[in-house]
Length: 300
Image (cartoon, rainbow, N blue to C red; front, side):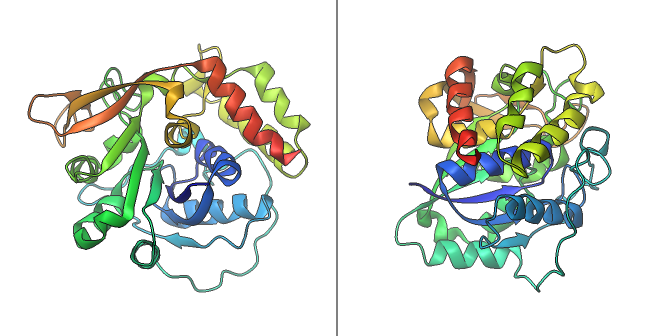
């Protein structure tokens, strides 16, 4: 089973991605970043999900609370005030002092006997900051699977996907790092929609997971951003699938440019001068959901 570090900003789809990851890879640590909500809230949310999954043995380390240069933009209109609105979580025990994301990443990668893969489903602030300070550890990093970007339309502006828009400078640093990167963006996440019938299937899972996911995605699916679609995109789960089951996707090795400022801030576009990135451009939706439910059914 692959050993994986998860960098996240939970977020409904991050929470779902983490639950899937717990069943298909060995999660060796979770780092949190500001994005869908503030750092304090995303860190609490990661702990909430791990507690529900009875995996509080996995360390959660908070990272950057701001993008590298821009003011923070959050997605409270989609994920609510808590970042995981829709479900009443039990009160967490008092937080034991934690190490930070940078320290957890350094410790994990430096002690790795073989490369550890990385899944990043939020703004890439933590990833970029770590890469800038630790070039000597690149050989310990396996594949970096990112949820972010789009070769077409965006979801926070006409041209930009949210994660890249929040910290385009970090995304640019990561894309130029030379790592083996797989990018699952809106080109594929807007094809893999959780339909109302599929949403009801959460109730078949054992509680608290089943009750939690049904309540969370009742809220998430009702958000205006999903109006007019046949279902709700579960963006971040596709970054897990891209790492574990890459054959579910059609990939293009694409020279990619990240627009760091101006009206196109956060846009990811093909460009001759860009680094070559493996970009998912299509997905076998039926096979993806078969894999997805096979993973979640382990919570029955």
